[in-house]
Image (cartoon, rainbow, N blue to C red; front, side):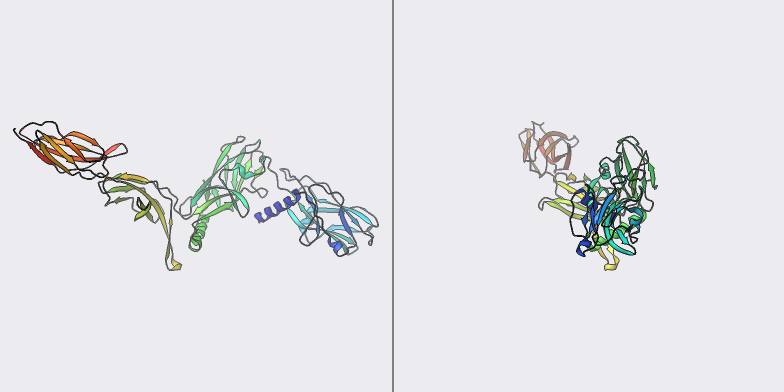
Length: 503
């Protein structure tokens, strides 16, 4: 109803604003009506036009309405009647009874009459006629009991123009993104998951003009309340041009309705999200002016979805040369989680595991040592249709962050031999290693000491300093991988022992 009226009003204003006079034959001329009608003075705003029936329709419009609801009366619309066949001295004019609203809103009277000519004027009956657009008014010209002429008239009265909104575009004062639904603009803010309790949206409004905002109101018959469950809240910031944020909650009954609609849309059209628009909100200014009543709707909106919306944070920790430990926090009202690992060969993320909603960790195993891996996790919701053979449809939520992690480098393979009083150790390259550390111990009871650190993972050969005679030495190596400025070590190589002889 509201949308239709707004569209009609827009069309009518457009016709008037174009300042185009439409000339067409009148019904009387087509049927050789004995009484002809002309408009005495056409202004820029009220020009006749031809309707779908071929009738010439005369127009009447008020341009402004004050905050008390009174319109500024336009000049009388003067229509001239002429006839060579009918004596117009004793005619009568009245508004057709079949349009009760027009009969209430309009007045018509005879200004002058003679045998061949007469003048009548039509205007609004009072300054407080309701906001309306009426296309179907009729002025009846009667002589005795006979209607000798019908004159079509359309009229318009304006909305209350909000003095605070200098551009007469209330939506420009609101936060959110612009959208269009059914030909109407709106501001949209956020998206709600209909499976979550206490779904809320937020908007920010800047007061206009030279007054501050006093309060915000919601229709109790609508689908929304403020976040505290009330329908009326005071403005936190009442200054001129001040910003106020309103938090609006969806009623449980409305969430239930949206859930049913979305589940049906998913089954029929594979749609998991829909746009919702409402005009229940009103803004009350300090001087009593209200924006958002029937005179000037505030169209706001949001999206509703059956997809899980909670953002997940995934953590990955190094566990061994072949395992990475993944961890996350549990989400409510989801069916489970899908874990993905990046496949560099296929250049895409591949699902490696699906776990239940109770799980909060997973260990990825059988990995290659010394490699870097990337993971993400996606919550999902399974919806089963019992009336459709238990068909199940899965709706995925948003991906988590990308968690990067490495496996520890592998176990080095070494060869050690004596060269005089020195030990030479050959270290075979370890894939993915950032470097190596060489450890040397003297005797069975000695302690291992790092004698050399290498950077890079190429094959290395270590040669010790001159060692003591008649002593047994033990040597081993382990590889490391640097990740986030920290060294992660793999397993030690097999220990090699070398004895330095007496001579």
